[in-house]
Length: 216
Image (tube, rainbow, N blue to C red; front, side, top):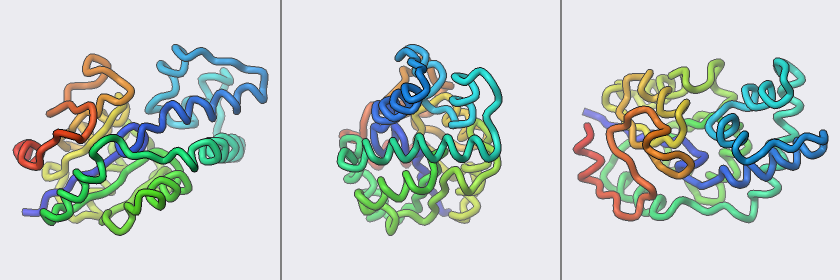
């Protein structure tokens, strides 16, 4: 029976949230807007760009306007992050362990494909993943399960044989809504801030393959 491990990207493969904060700060500062760190914590981490922008602009941002604003902000992020790409401790070693044990793996992110290509390119991830999905590949964003159900379909594995690594409330909810097991990565939130997960980690350093397989 095939089993699959699916990773979110931001806060799960790399600790990108501080750099998304910087990008959003620059983006909003161009418009004389200065959200606080507390506001970002409540309304940015793990949220889609349409939610974030609609919240801070105080009106619905959608369609062509959203695409333009999103492109501006994500370009800022890539400029800031390009020379800072750094995986969460132990991630690459853990991934190698999964691959040497013939486990299927995928990435399912709400970020745009250009961000995924930047990070996956720097860390040589693409040839290790049997499924790669970004925001362009879905019509509904997390907490909707679409990205995880599509990943399971790509991997040809039933949702109950998929284990997801997630760090945000909406991401964990999406995986649970897809009927999958979840490991909560505590990079930007505490246990109390996430829906109940099957396991919690702060990084991959001491994560044993047996521990992960036992979750199935």
